[in-house]
Length: 112
Length: 115
Image (cartoon, rainbow over the protein chains, first blue to last red):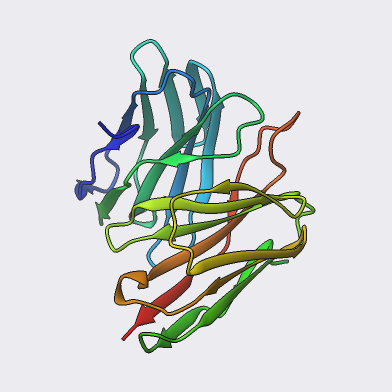
């Protein structure tokens, strides 16, 4: 079993839709959870960074962590064609841990 | 303004050659990383240096050798290139470990094609 599982998609949605992207993980030591967005032929850029369980909102983006279920989500409201990208979840252990474990990425296409 | 930069952006070479990729960060971070991203977009850590000291060394062929002359630079040298080395290589940096939350920032990538 991989440490982090992510549905690779692709996921196609109409403009304005609410998008839900998800990752599950098996290592209970993970404490920090990240979402990266990667446009085609570009490097990943940090979108959201959360610690422990709960929700964090930033504009149209909401990151949700459920540590009891080992499940994290990224919600995108009012999705735009410019949101079309690959979304990668990443997680790491206690403070002081350098190694990130990435999901395989979900390719999202928002249709105008 | 570039935070993490890599050169070259594209690298096309023949099997058996030796090549280097350079990375520089101007964020003042003390930790740098090399990742390999395959054609299915899977991003896998290869190496990490903290203050010029190797702290992560994943199962990578010893044809790959990282070198960190100072904490702002991390280069990757690859000997005897093979077809399977074709991928996009990303450099990243963070103010890692200890008291910080070690968010990682990525460079634009180097697309390596081995013919």
